[in-house]
Image (cartoon, rainbow, N blue to C red; front, side):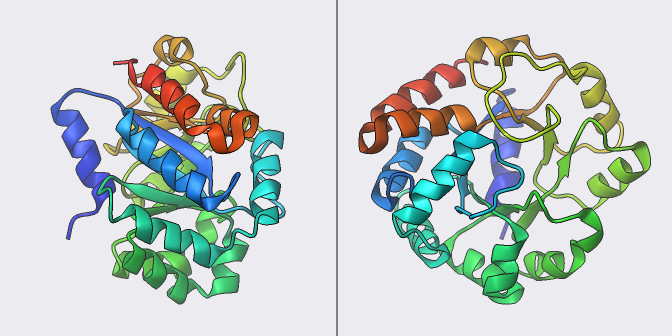
Length: 262
């Protein structure tokens, strides 16, 4: 069986369209709202959705997503309840769903059991920001056996040798970090994105998705480099924080506006 991530990018390439990848923290403000948010984002044009598993020490996250994690944990969100959320979503959509999480959650659950649960519930890929490439093999073996894609991250500071090794073993797409530091909306991105794209592209034909700090349609249109996808997370989480259980419509409006970038 083909992975939904790969199939979605093939479909978009045939239509000469870019992918919009969106993110929410599961359980913020509650799991029922998360369920509605995912379906609304797909309805308004999101091509792939990342579902963040809340964690008490999210080292790659800025204040916006960190606070969302705290709210989600306070509402009683657990890893198992998020798997139940994915199962429920799979009765309504066949679009790609990814989990974004920290490696301690995988180890606590048990790597083999966690990956098996991903397969049985309908998860297509995992983004684990604090899993070093050098330590990926144990989790990767289980993931490959279950056709779950581990999405690797590359930063502007990644050297050429390491970059080549990372992309060699990658599947689905490459998560390209636009700026150094943690997640969060940025008014300006100072990285030479055209050069960053070219450095990665010469090493792989996989789709390249740019994330960290992206928030407006105007910003996406101004970005240099032929990126195949854009990832928007913190801006959506900000809207959820502002509107809570009434955020579904507002997030839908934002996603619809972002999707008009083609």
